[in-house]
Image (cartoon, rainbow, N blue to C red; front, top):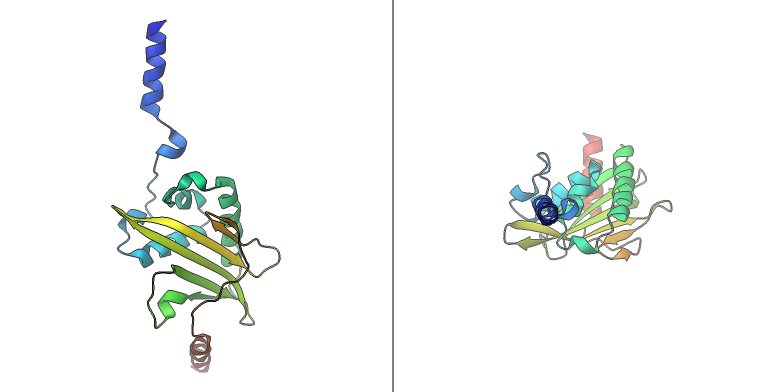
Amino acid sequence: MRFILFALVGIVMACGNGSQGDYKIIDDLPFQKAKDEKAYADIILKSIRTNRDLPIWQEFENKTVIDKDSLHLIVGMYSTAISGRSDWDFIDVYKDSDKKDISQGFDYAWLDPSGRLGLQIRVIPVAVKKGFKLKLIEFRSRLDVMESRAFPGGPISDYVKLDYDWDANLERKLKEDQN
């Protein structure tokens, strides 16, 4: 009887907790190789665009407060929305901004064909000993059929003002159309 108990304890210790203890490295999502916060946020966005919520979940600074099912639903919903419409304009707010302030995270936005703000995603990374982790991600939608939600957090308002020069963006588009 002792042998069986000892064997079971050994097996449990060897296996560990596979659902939370394992960190899966995905070659095309090199979170651990991100050189700065912006590169890390861009990898999080790539994970959303390619509808992969598990890599995002395992990047959270505190995974225990994240509802995996809710994250799966929201990532799938936003992935479908941003990859399903080729007529929406994508804006990388930080990249296009003259002010390079990383304190509030990195905003990404999608404008509908009429130029109205439709979707926003904000990624807030935090530096840790070995690279970066995900502190917060906000999914905001102005579309009635999509939920706005923060992880960690929960439901949030549909809109947060972006510090972005919309007039300069419009001028760039007009110049591109003329060429």
